[in-house]
Length: 329
Ligand SMILES: NC(=O)c1ccc[n+]([C@@H]2O[C@H](COP(=O)([O-])OP(=O)(O)OC[C@H]3O[C@@H](n4cnc5c(N)ncnc54)[C@H](OP(=O)(O)O)[C@@H]3O)[C@@H](O)[C@H]2O)c1
Image (cartoon, rainbow, N blue to C red; front, side):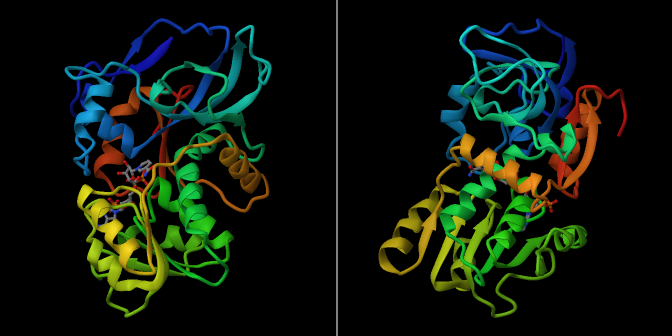
């Protein structure tokens, strides 16, 4: 089968399309013919081993491979069709259209992926394409996890920093569904897109500081590691909740002081990416309450451009690679 592989850490050019062995499902596994996979900021960080947050460099390097990547195929989030199942699998059958998360096993930048059947893999929403479905699990699962943790109530003011990215575009829509008044913070080319998916207010971070309006927020969800903790505290209401998607170690330490010595709470746990959450997202999509904001679809052969776009360019939402395309952009 065809797959995008990387044999060393480095720039997008380390990614190459190669013929590799097609996987074969074990007794408790499912073999999926991948139709599309999201190209995430996390994939780019794993490929280059360059993380905005430095504290997990060592544990992650030990897990991913010290000298070279232990798992040479990236891609944690996908959509596709079940091709075969192991003898102990009953929850899938050949032909099922699914989408899901491959966890740290990765491997979705390929024509086929083999995963344990208990992973977070569920039936794909009927009303969106495979490319759109692949754009859901990362952003949707993370946004839902954090918005539920924040326990957003109707009428509350929610600020989302980094709103135009994979997680942010879902967080905007889920916070709106929960009845919040949403302020999106990102770069100016994303304003129209963010308003079109429900943002009530927009702050261009290249021109204005979030403290400029004197507004305070009940919930702040921050995806941008380099943001200043104290600036967010200035605009968080006295009983507000601050959620960090990408916390630095200093911010985690400060969060204990905030939670101990004030009525504010700070939260930074990684999302569990549970099946129940993906089913909830599927229902929201089927009911047309949320939708993935797709930026561009690339073929496998264009994976270098896809990584360059996610890493360096200002994209309008989510980038995917589709396995059946040939050099379209
Ligand atoms: N906690 C978790 O469980 C978890 C899970 C997955 C990922 N993450 C991490 O969370 C981060 C965000 O993920 P993502 O996939 O949503 O990333 P993403 O798609 O790159 O989105 C980040 C957004 O933030 C914008 N941005 C950059 N600098 C900004 C600033 N100073 N102020 C406001 N907005 C700014 C970016 O816009 P530009 O176009 O201007 O750059 C982009 O729209 C990643 O670093 C990822 O590794 C955390």
